[in-house]
Length: 140
Image (spheres, helix red, strand yellow):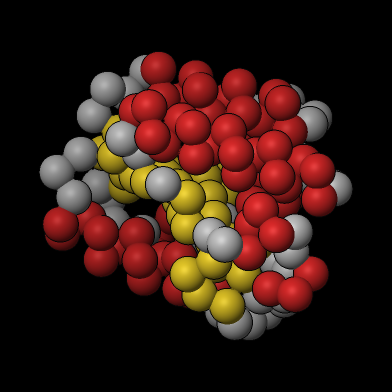
C-alpha cells in the first residue's frame, strides 16, 4: 500500500509524517523504517523507529533508489511500514515518469511483502501525475 502526503515546501508535510510514524509505533507489531535526507529528525522519532539518512549512500537515480529499498526489505522480515520524507529528493526523482515508476514499484513491493509506504512529496496535488493523485491521503 502506498499513501502520499503532498504539498509545497513548508506546509507541514514532515510534521504530519512524524506524527503518523510516532502514532503507528503504538499499534504496529512489526518494524518501522523512516527514510530522510538527514539525521535532523532523529530526536522527534520514537526510538523504536529506524532512521536512515539516504543521502549517505551513492544513489543517483530512481532505479538505484528502488534497489536500495529492496535491500532494506530483504534484511528485515518483520518490516511493516516505511515512511519516506522528502521523497523526490531521496529517490533522485526529477520527472513525472519516475514518480509513476516509483509509486508502481512501491505498490508492488507493498503488496508482495505486506509493507505500508507513506511518502511525503513537495508538490501541490494538482502538479502530481494521475498515478500519484489517487494515492494522496493528505494534501496541504
